[in-house]
Length: 316
Length: 322
Image (cartoon, rainbow over all chains, first blue to last red; front, side, top):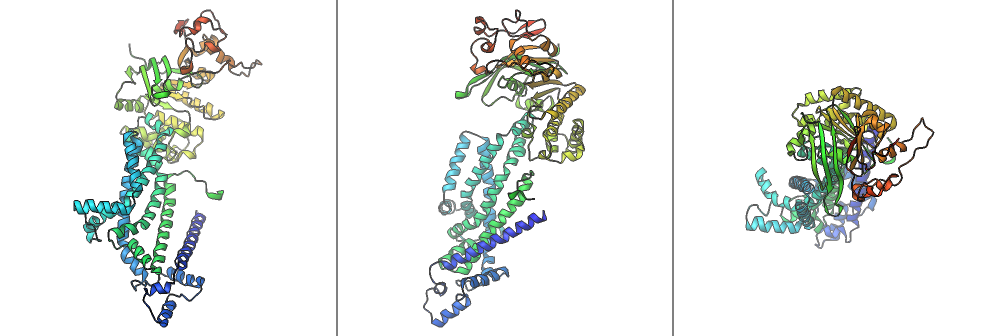
């Protein structure tokens, strides 16, 4: 057990190192001179350019630049934003709550909607199933910025139920401000989760032990809950983990569309002006979210299926 | 007169859905008395499993049933869904062929054994206490600990014992066993059969035992029904079946059984088994029967009683099978 945890931790560190190298490298290797972007297109004296290059270590060879950056990241120093002239860590920390609220809200909508629709489709074959399939097909194919426009025009402009813009304050204000963004964010992923749930449940519905449970006089709702949905959870959990991590990326579009100042919007505005310390930090955060979500899924999986899995390589 | 424990009368089952439409059972009648062990023997596809499952109204998808299946006089085919659940929980239990596939692999043994009792409203503690007793009665050591274990931690034979314990939880009067030992290896087969017959005797339950093994059925049953292509072709006492099989198919089956004490090699029944859907007019066995006459392919022979045995063969009186 201890050995497995150790291997697992080593794997996570290796993943983070490799991806951090890719993240750092891709921003550095992008066309254009970072110094001129940092100056924001203004003409500057050669001495000012030299000062900028010195501050961002642009004169050092790439490995040295990376080492300095990753050393800073490890100690919590993510660098300074050229755009905002602030510490990146502080910038992200100020915006993270809004983004986390949005992800949490959307995640809840996805989980409830996806499971309910998927279960409904699996249990009511025929018209209901086909309707859900078509509906989720459309939902999955709808880009979140299109959904955002549609939701704003219907619920903000026409009906005036929800605000179209801003973060809101207090719990009630937050929820009302985040409802439309969360719905726009959830739409695509609800369809995905519904389809995975449906497929997984249909597979479990065909199992012999489900028929045996019915033959033992167990009420239908208990059979569905304890034998069908329960056994269908493994793929549902895996997909949910990936969705939650993917939401962090998807927030960039939705936050921009709804004028929310969150991490996603920070990423978009930073990419536009090539504020690379911010882009690097947010990209690393995304990687961290995927690694974290995968870790949680892997830890939860044995609770869902107690049967011993076949470890890769078969070493115990 | 009190009704019989199980009385199946003229049961027809047919699939009605689309192109798969075909008959499966034709006029099946059988009965099981209180505390009686009855065997139902036939090859794969003969309809023996469908007959057995119909007692719990577990019909294949898209199937339609006519006739009646009565448990203590109550027709299973027409009863309400609520009454059916009640019957499945308390009156009739079934033991399935493959315990590994029949028990949810992700839930604990205790969940499986107590599930029916909990659905019936018993408290968790009482149900677990009773489950431990049941596991003990089927010969599982440390039943308390076993309740907390998962199916993959048990062998097939042990898991079939768990299945039997689960079937006994509702104190049924009738036990259905659908090839309960076919998926087990030979040494555990005997143990499971011993447990099954022992508990049946103790609790004086009726048993409908479905198998393809005529010898096994005769060893543990009072009476045996032989099925061929969706019809019952012969019914008589286990002893009578061996001493004097009346239907050519039964004697064919007996001759096909390999025997240790005889040097004579087993003789197979020529041809291949047919299902009811592909059976020609008349006696379904006629094409494989050495004694067939032109009349055999005209009408389906009716079941008649000859010296206490029931047989559906036109020539049953003339032929003396040995």
